[in-house]
Length: 225
Picture (cartoon, helix red, strand yellow):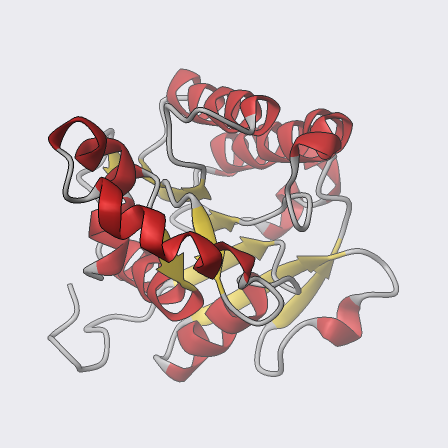
């Protein structure tokens, strides 16, 4: 548990997949600033993109065998590998990258005895992005089937540099929030900022759920992190 506005009471060993990406690079910097020990999986040739202070682990995110050796019992594994800028046109990438990568991470965590698996899923149910939602739901099922202690974060869209077009939908969200039949969906599929997302991930790392349980963090909870 972390005191409000303070530093964590204990350092954690954190293994991050997707650590050079949109969310991952920022998360790693924040974890290091708070005293955690971070190792980040990187493809050969990409190790220089791993944020300073983290140890780069060379491997293939789609193959558990390539990085399971770098995991230790008691680690927190944060899985952030995913197709950038998801859209309905990228269903093939979701099935060929996102799904195999989470299955590989789950297998590695199970074999190594990781104590906590943190997964960025997606808000569900949802009226669009069917393939993306199906793949993320399959990732959640893989985690449950492996009996991992886990935190599943379910944002819909994370606003940040290069990711701002949904701001055009803000008037719609405001209107939907006033209509009882649309209010729940508007909250579940609401927008979160990159800062809120990183804060929610840090909280997940520092305050894991009870052993053997799966905790779901939805959009309102991400906003409140």
